[in-house]
Image: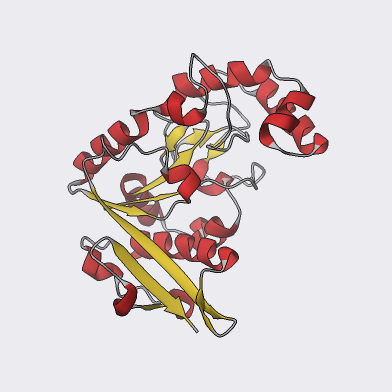
Length: 254
């Protein structure tokens, strides 16, 4: 199985890890997007991404520092570069070399800039959310730009690792980039709810962190069936059979 997650806005490009690396599959596409972004002023980036002037300034600098060099000095392994709620739950810094090797075949990060990233792919600092309406090469947004490419790459990756199970731990915004009509996989969605205000509800912060924890569970336990995922019990979550289906695994806590 392969688990897919969203990236994070918060980045860490200061910490260094001594592991072998790979390069993103869609380097050419990322460079094409960067060339378009380099043409944007700070005001245009602020408006395009609905971010503050300060964040626009930071990201315009990032676009202009982006290099075609395959081993850029400021690049980092994706699994360590992304921070945020999902990655707090993932705790990748505590993985063993064997677990990182397993993740390379069974864990993927969807990305507005890179399309689909393996954990040990080197990435450079950027911000480009999948929902951004960036016009490039005749496409009116990133969903059109990526088209079938992400689904086709997932098909190849699923074939290489030996089954057709895709565990969707990504947000709606990012998973929309996967063309399901082209995807040759059984997609399993996962739902996490916490007891809040007298009932079980999705609490965004906890749900995001739980997606990372489920990814960690997969990487550490190396399950091969959907049934094995029911045993997930990190941080007090338990399988909710009454709200689960063949396409959805529900978990609750509290």
